[in-house]
Length: 328
Ligand code: GLU
Image (cartoon, rainbow, N blue to C red):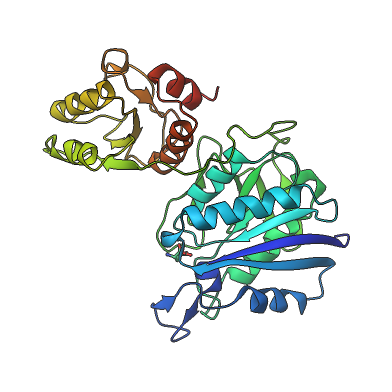
């Protein structure tokens, strides 16, 4: 590994977590400062220079607009700095997919941006944090990592932002990718890419917005009625993602209420509460008649991120929303 300068942006999470006991279950996310984490890595004498910049010290369940804006500004500045080879973001795992996808959609590809977390706190037996961080350093400093946009490194695997999701609550290998699985395998001593870079020459799909609109995810359940939809409209939701049954389905009364929402100017995207798979148009639900968009390969959390950016850009028409979910 040749000596390179990497910017490390810290936000907290379990990778910076400390436990009351090395064998206990409870711990506090974001307790350990980024400076301490980077000093621990520096002691390993790697041929990289890490520039630490703390953004927050929180569990990622609390991440939102202020931290996302700060991350975006720091990375955009780093992309214009010829002395920086790559960016690493330490992040809680709960919402890693949202932050990764939001940044991927709003940043030019080119410089590697690698998010990393851990499933076990830094001082737990068998902690995965240092290993994941070493893996992230290997990825961020590899020239072949360029033009892949934002990636997530967890459990010796590398995922693209558009594919990744947390699929287990506590396993070390908690992350999965859909429709692509891992795009590389990484260890502290090796890195194997499985495919060519997928964002060569691609620029950001959206400008960084001035604010993000209120968009809710509503999970469908058997026997539910239309009142949750009406409640969301009542609090001024600007968009709704339904985490539907199967291929994004919901009880008839709920679909009818969602069609009313569309008629009132609130875009509705159908995704699935099922772990993985496509949600396509007009399979069982008549999207053409009801005015919905189908989330295709995106699960509810990523569908919400894309819908927020679309609405922030003034795009609410069902056809244009569908085109964006189709990748256009
Ligand atoms: N809920 C915390 C977070 O997402 C801890 C989970 C984790 O980092 O694995 O930051």
